[in-house]
Image 1: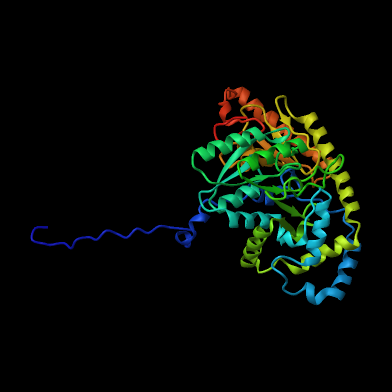
Image 2: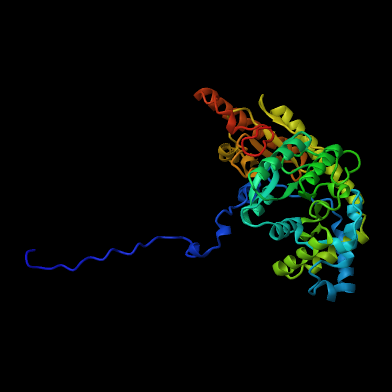
Length: 445
């Protein structure tokens, strides 16, 4: 109005609505962290009406729990005050000595002073990454690779570059090409992460000659190798292949675990590393947990010294072999034409490649509706690939449930193919559907 001076209206302060009021305070390294695809599936996949081919949960039903209970009771009566107290940051000497005996089965001759006990091998991988990697460093990993490792590498802001695999595991020439390209680009490569035995998720195994070739490439390029070996003793045929650590003690850090050969609930693993690295690991362990759980260490030591643990491993092999056979038979009977899969000689997992055009991530809700669960292949790649793949596990369900799960999964795939045929969706760009594995970025295997 004329003659009336209105006060200037100050701009309204922006008010954002956030479910997480702490969002602006988190460290930058948390921004890329996401929930594990396996953990996200866990709740729905473990409903009794769903056949879960998703998880890698060991089947411990055959453990002699009554004998173990009696032995643990005796241990508590004798060693309770020590077992229930703080312990060493490196781990109990008796357990570290027993671990050297376990590793000897795969050709590793080591001293207990170079063993660091960890809260499962997952923590071992975390500690190794923590002491070696700065943000922006490169970690080389097989394609596909263990989802838990990819999460760890992501949490430390490293860049994962995948190296191609074939039916014999990681390809030495692809590793060499990746190293040459990265070094030419001025990138710092800190280590190669590999699972040589019954790889998770692909189920393939590096033969001895392949391991020697990979180690030769690593030595040529002064590359450290991190060998993750949770499944090595679970071979379905013959004696274990010598560990990579047994072939090159100076350049290989070895991760081991009792989760697959005894009890995952104990959460006891270890890292075997050269002496100087061991010192850094112990310091990192002390800053993370002060010391690994002492009671679990006494429990595992008691099991190893009072039970026929090697006989139990043989029992596990026979049980998992039966389940593996049930899965391979079910896949052969129910999968549609164009589906291929690996044939593991140990471990827990089979890797499926779907007919061209199918997307395992997009298909998952319909599979759950059909009461079967798996892990989409994209969970095992750091670069968005894997849509045409999936991991299925045979370790936990009994054989009849595995067969039923394969039947349900086959029905889901057949319906998906019918939809694609009906709507003409088969001409999908093959670049989004790599074969078993692929190399660094554009380097297709």
